[in-house]
Length: 412
Image 1 (cartoon, helix red, strand yellow):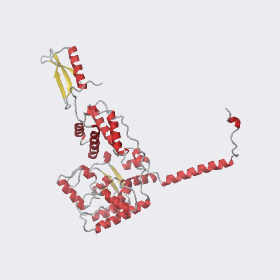
Image 2 (cartoon, rainbow, N blue to C red):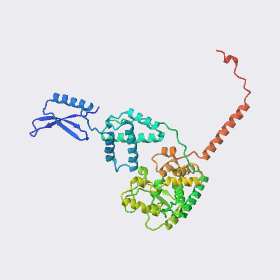
Image 3 (tube, rainbow, N blue to C red):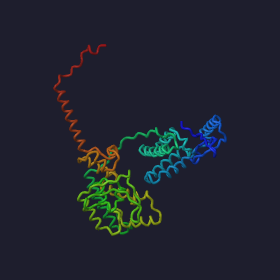
Image 4 (cartoon, rainbow, N blue to C red):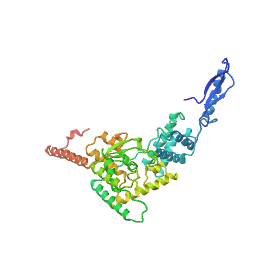
């Protein structure tokens, strides 16, 4: 066990004598020293051991912080190194943790607190996936404290995440994709014809086609600027954006820059869209009036990094309307990305290729959350099973009739 208090021999000014000092950490995590005013080694060790016991019994708290203070301290150390959206999710998880177990000293957290939190989340209706995400954030916060030397061990290291069934990957069929595109075009027409609207509609048809072609995430598409598109090379870059006069700060998930190919059709569609767009608007999919509104919010100090991740109001509601118009009962915009990645894999791209182009750290993520079992694989498996069962049936017919085993075989 690591000592909380150490002895220090402080020499006198003339260097001929010394005095023992105790070194320890105070409540604000600052290093302190306390003079013992003598040079007796045995006496100094007894005093050090006693002061050590006092610290461990909380007579004098070393580096004491409530969980709420611990969270602020952790964020102040990591801000700028972690995405704002990640910090936001971590804060939500810790605040919920505090609601369950109380705003206690962070050094008093034990494994049992983690188990209590998991059960409380499940009892209040959180899905296993949501609980697992909260536990991951909490573990990371405490692990950083271990790495900084604030804790000796991560108290939540062995807390198990709730088991959850693997979700079925939702991909749109070719027919559903066609219906989506037709519905998106019709929806744009309805919005354009509505003279009472104060904002321009999103180019939904182009946005859906871009998602199906590139597999880009919603935030990546909405934060794409015209500088990201190379019409000559027929590529589109996924790059973070800096805070400038024209653009707001936005960071890529997992900080993974990548360049994706565009088909000839997509290049042509982007060129037509650029020709229709007014000068001075850098974003491909942000309507002009919405961009002007965002610029005013930025000027007034009401714009945040979280808003920049999804700069279109009512995005999900609008997409659900398009789904309904297309006669599709379930789905979300992210399913377009899953559809694209599954199509890449089904049409010959290797596992490594799909993982790289998707911007994932490992193929396991791609396989688990994005690659659906294709209808072709199901049909080929059905044919293989049918062939095997047919061979078994034929072999069974060629055998002698079943007579049963001899009676002596059943005698004890």
